[in-house]
Length: 363
Figure 1 (cartoon, rainbow, N blue to C red):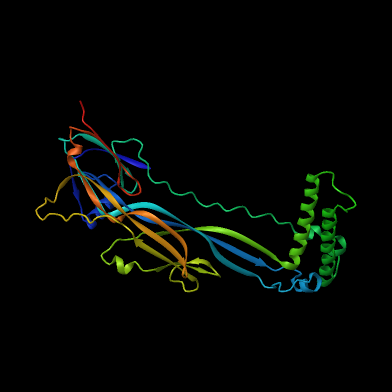
Figure 2: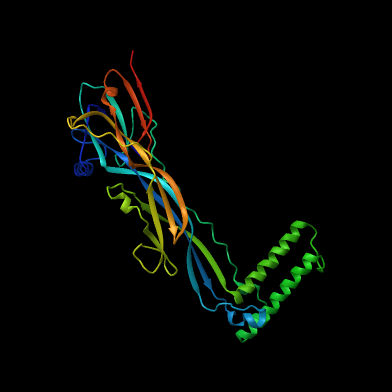
């Protein structure tokens, strides 16, 4: 949702970090008793981590798999495991509390309409179609296949057995009969052959379904389900950036509990590395005699970053994104916002950079 603030533009006063936080906490985004407050964005990285959970449940006849089906190494113990199957990075804007500016009312200037995001980020001036960056859609897992109770395919003779060993033996015979019937059907030697290909496929699917269901009593059942975990990381440009840009533990993956916190040593670590790859010229130093109050609109000149997520030493996700926190700000002259011009300004919702600027001089 966007907020529109009707105001009279005058000078824009940059506040310190502490003052900006106080202003935004006391008032609705963009509104103060003296005028309005807006901020510029910085890049936050949103990670959609897809974790697949695999659960193995041994079958009732698992101890007889080797004897009747000649299948070795069939586990008789339940097991659960997790693995990361995908990591999707998305750059999202968040309010940069180090870049907060105030607009004060002044009747000498032209009335303008300021469009702000919910957190106070400036989206544009005098425009009606400013849009924020959409939040990515949530991951939707595929529905789990419906499983049929194997006992639905057992004959009366099998169900009436008095021992598990005998039930396993008769079930194994039933499995071999199903496989033989499937082989005869494929070879065209069955007593009742289907009339067309569609009927043939229906019969094969049913034989496969019965074989798989009865075999699960020996081999067990393995189910897999994928869940999405949303993680955030906000790179900060500091004077110690080079020292802080080494790899750090982002999260861990435990075989018992799935995705866990970075400080939980029960899981194997996944690392994150953010590199400043900006190629911007250094910003001009501020003149000592420059007035502290400057008229105009502050915008971002963003840099760029590269973010890599590692599993051990292997990179599993690498992306490059614009990063205002690795760039600098630029002041658009206040002369664009007086009565001599009708100014329309659109900022990039992600970076806070100028996307379009029209300044028409009225007739």
